[in-house]
Image (tube, rainbow, N blue to C red):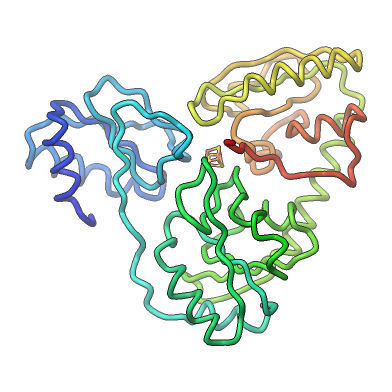
Length: 325
Ligand code: SF4
């Protein structure tokens, strides 16, 4: 694993005797090896957090002197206590095949976006696009995002802040998860995914339209709901209890019943058996989008709940985000 010496230095420097390790799913294969190496080379005792880790919004509470969190950048607006974010850096940028594949789909003025994983590639890709005649823009981060051009599944600031400067976006990364919100928040500009693993590029339009149809259907199903369960997360970077209180008050204004449910990991199994007609999720905004098919009842974002209650028009639909100002 990259730069293990730096990590060992931090552990020694903090005089930790016990260390907790927290890995996202994609790095789990490294967990045993890293725990063994840290123990062998520093003499500390390591514990691996086996709870899922989805982001820097969710740092494990562990009975240790130091938690080492891997795979995410810290969120600048959060205060972390005894946590070290071990930066693995980006993998080497071997070729521009995936960018070449995107070129025929790109407008002249392009906003460049990516994730934490590939952020170190952006300057080289920006230069390459400029050499091909494009004007390239990379949006500065906000208080929840660490790097310029970085997207979170819950924060699209680096895209929306350059919306007026660009005619479309190039997202460098794999999968639809991160760029989907851009395609919904900025519907009149193409979002092109350049996938470095497949060496391919594609437009996100069809995926966006499919998700919007799904959201429209969830809203329609919830229209006659009388009792809502409003989900609030305990996780440090997902807690929107103030918003939940506002939504509960909004429900009362429209003669609907609403009860707040507080939980750590939000999952359909843990919400089974409660007598609600629909859920409103204020935890990670992606739960309502990504997990919808796993829930028996409709599960809505806060803005979708407003549409159900008639407080917001479908034409003013926005993707749910957690922004830090
Ligand atoms: S709130 Fe959700 S989308 Fe945002 S960082 Fe956490 S897990 Fe990712």
